[in-house]
Image (cartoon, rainbow, N blue to C red):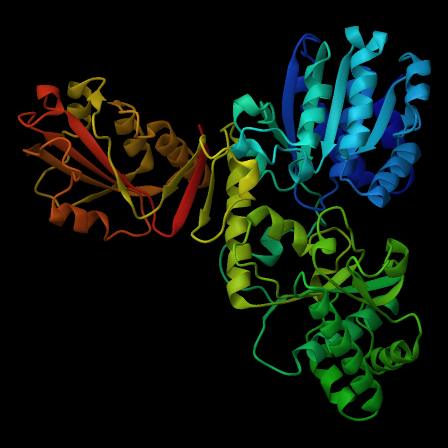
Amino acid sequence: MNYLDNYLDKIKNEGNIELAESIRKTTESFDEKYLANYSFASHEVGLLFGNVQSGKTGQMFGIMCQAAMNGFYAFLLLTTDNTVLQQQTLNRVKRDLTDFLVCDETDSGLFIDNQLQKPVVVVLKKNYRVLRLWANVFNTTQFMQGNALFIVDDEADAASLNTLVNKDKQSSINKYISSIKDEGMCSIYLQVTGTPQSLLLQTAQSGFKPNFTHYFEPGKSYLGGDFFFPPSGKPDCVTYLTPSKTMTRQVVLRHLAVSAQLLGTGSVVSNCLLHPSVRQNVHEKFAKEVREALDWCRDNADGELVSELQKIYATLTPSKNELLGFDDLYSAVKDLLADKDLKVLIMNGKYDVTEDDYKTGCNFIIGGNTLGRGVTFPTLQTIYYTRLAKEPQADTMWQHSRMFGYDRDPGMMMVYIPQELYKLFSDINATNNSIISQIKQGIEPKIYYPEGLSPTRGVVLDERHVNVLSGGTNYYPSDPDNSTIEEITKLLAGFSDETTYYKVSLKLIENLLDHIIPSSEFRLSTFESILRMMLADNPGEQGILVVRRNRDVAQWTGALLSPNDWKISNSFPGHVVLTMYQVTGTKGWHGKKLWIPNIKLPNGKVYYDEH
């Protein structure tokens, strides 16, 4: 049976031709690289990486269908520990994968009775009691002893990693996932996420570092990081917040105008998201401000509201439908203000809000952590984002933004955000693009962020094996050797000691470092990985080279560079600077005329590497 064609036909019949072709492209590439030659005798860990809210569920299902055609008949699909999300996923699997037997966490008998006569998908939430039960099922069921298990871990960075790694213990969920994937005869464990930072920084010993990474491109209508946070300039869809008592009113007015346009041209829903804090009292405060702003609109419906809407109307450039005339839009806004379907919703532990509450009408949604991964807001056009953590984490921030997706109208998007927070998001997007570029070029991804922004939560990173290098710091090996002094001398023959510095390709700097045998404290491989990352982003990237010969420098003194050369190194804050000293060898250095490298990475960034 061609499970993939059957699945894609369902998508095409729903009118999603572009999505079906995207899934086929991803699946064929994944099959060629990782499934077709699988040995059915090993445990493999892989990463399926796509942009946040770019359709990864469909890509996952396509790969599962192809895997079934390659001999995998037992699938485990893991979701976050949320009953609603687990049930949503279960229902979607039943709807889309009709050729598979689908089991939930209570269906162990059904799974065993099937005896792998047809492909089976078990959908479980990442709860340690549930995982413990199914670890026993998988590890003791006779027919599983000789068959491969294909595990798809959705949002694998969210709850699967060992949160006790720095206490030399193993957290419960991590323990039972490890048992399921490692104790059988063979398995493929496919991690799926749009924020892979914590996964890429796992150690090989953890069992959760991906052996391979596969990136899939979003569709053409996707609005992602580059739309909101381009490499230069601020797009029209972003408004920096200013100290104003009427800022919430401005957000409300904007969303009313956008909603009138959308609902007046065929859309069934228009959502606005306000993300101010994790604190419930702040959510109440903002809900009160939204309601007061709506009351102001009602009280001024025939007065100041008209001029305010005219200002907003002049900025609307819908791309999916023709812009309504102002009189029609104004009339629609007044109808909305009188409509009971206009809702102000608070999403936190205090209120019971489901997706049915915001799938139709004009909605203002306010919340904190509940607005994170796994929650999708249809036709989200207006965002008011002010939350700034004391110690921001890139993956958490990116998941909480919720602004990305396919069903947004680019000509009517608006994000209200503090300028400093916008800068952080831009930095995160730059690193995301770097990760994607490295993956596409077959380079093991390396990660960097500005100072003050960490890649992920520290509890899942092994402090003994995550190397952190700070830009702006001069590093050199205290007791190195050269693989060949003559080769380095030849490479540097055209560079004079008398010239203060040279601007050179990073590829030359990379070649020079290839001839250095470092001492144990100098992580040469990390520096080389960082250079490869920079070259993946920009093959023509330039660095600064300083060459000095016959330097009578003593070993073990704690400093290598002279005051002048130290000043030169630090006068290029945005560049990699490599200073090559050829020492006389009269004061240590094993009596050799070695070449000693001193390297400084661009200022203001922190580089992370697992070793």
